[in-house]
Image 1 (tube, rainbow, N blue to C red):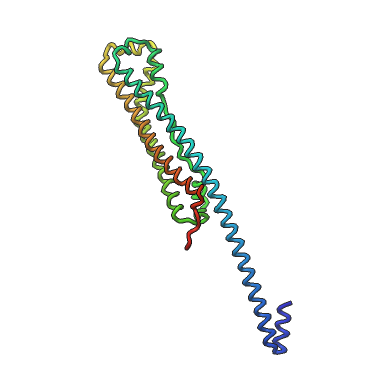
Image 2 (tube, rainbow, N blue to C red):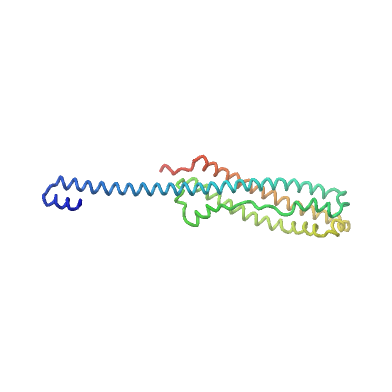
Amino acid sequence: MILKRLVKNIKKQDWFGVLLELCIVVLGIYLGFQATQWQAEREAKHAESQLLMRLLEDLTNLENENYRIIGHYNVQLEKYNKALEFTRNDDSWKLGHKAWRKRLQPLMGYADPVVDLPVYQEIVATAQFSNIKNQLFRSELTRFAHKLGNTEDSNKAFLTLYGPAYQSVFDHLTERKEFPNDVAKNKEQKMKQLIRDLHTMRNTVSLLRTFTKSITEQASTLRIQLEQDSVKPDSA
């Protein structure tokens, strides 16, 4: 319709009408472009909001679970201290296997720190970093993800130290008749070995507690940023 009027005005050399029709066309294109851009920005903002809400949930879960695990480490470290004190006491070696099992059984094994951040893994896999507009927050999130990976690698390294000591103590627990009676045959050497094993296990748990505290504190910092709505697009 507009095109017909435009052609008609050109034939009539009605230049004002031509100009008016052209303005209407240009204005229509401009408004259409603005509407499309507004809709795209709205969808991008919604996508970012949904992504950050899911990330907030992941950070909260990671933080809560690791605080629980840190509490477990604290209790376990106290038990190690009591077990070491018990082991160094000569009177303890006069007791039977049942008494030793009561002291050593609670020390066996430990909870791994929680290092999974599923939403971040999804962001990397689907290239959604552009949906998070704040570049500073993106950098902090990336550093935190790398720290989680380093913690996981460290846990695997700690296990190579913990494993042999764990197996040694476990063997004592399964030797119901021999332990601790067999220690009398070579008490000094076997006592020292048991103490070394308990120290190795204790130090592993202590190091894990340190690493877990560090990632939990950083998760808390990121969570607070999200909760306070401080993650906003850059002004640029």
